[in-house]
Amino acid sequence: MMTISKPLFCLLTLLTLVHLPLSAQSDSAKIITSSRMIGVGGTNILDTYLSAEHFKGVGISFVATVERKRPQRRWSTLMEHEANLSYVHDRANSRKELEGAYNFYWGKFYNWSLFDHRLTLQAGALGNATLGFIYNTSNSNNPAQARFHLNIMPTGIASYKFTLFHKPMMVRYELNLPLAGVMFSPNYGQSYYEIFNRGNYDHNVVFTTFVTAPEWRQMLTLDANLTGKWTLRIGYLGNYQQYKVNQLKQHVYTHRFLIGFTRRFSLIPHRL
Image (cartoon, rainbow, N blue to C red; front, top):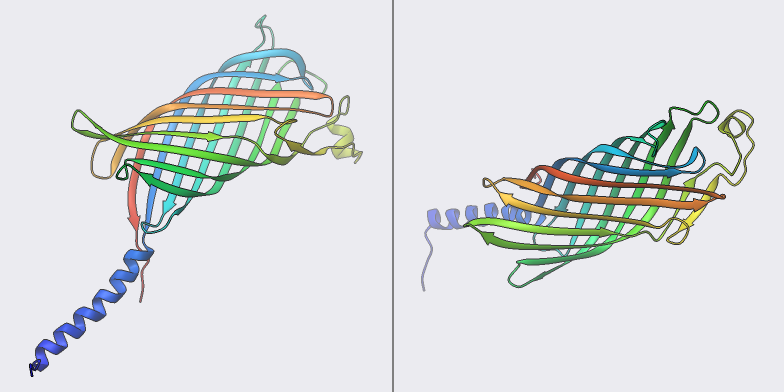
């Protein structure tokens, strides 16, 4: 019968005790992909509460995304921030509008890996909160319009990894569509003074669907690896928000050409 010496037994026991928490940490580690991008492009605005005219101009956007996923699990979490600021004018260039908005997106996705992990497909839904304003510099009565919208958006994402000029690359496409939500809107002919100073409610909280508030948001990006952790990301973001409620129409269409950086790293929780 083979016997194990006491020093060897202690060494094997120590390795086992060390390996167990390391394995647990590896299973619970999160792979985090974080990106920051700046975008510039055109903006098209119509708000019949302020004016029947269409306004066009340019705007800038800041887009930040964070995606978290555990290596051995199918589900991932995505969080996106999008902040916009636009300065637009009417066709005669006589009236101006200033538009600003913050969009927050958060959701869960189920992941499929195909073709030796080169192609990743993700399906899920995002919760979207939009908060913003449109200010017409020419209006003396009701010069501004508030924007507030909560929305559920089914979402699909496709990512494909490849090599070009011996450099790792990845192309990614994300599509968000509306399902249902709730929004704030004054009624036709109603002033903000009536709503907030006199407390005259007139169907100002409106339930929306993909019919009354259609929206189409898409983002196409290309990643070019620079170092082991940092990646250059360029792309296009199109966000087309619109609604027709309370006999009022509004749309805000933004087109942004993006550039920024992406970082991918592992987060291992500390265990005592």
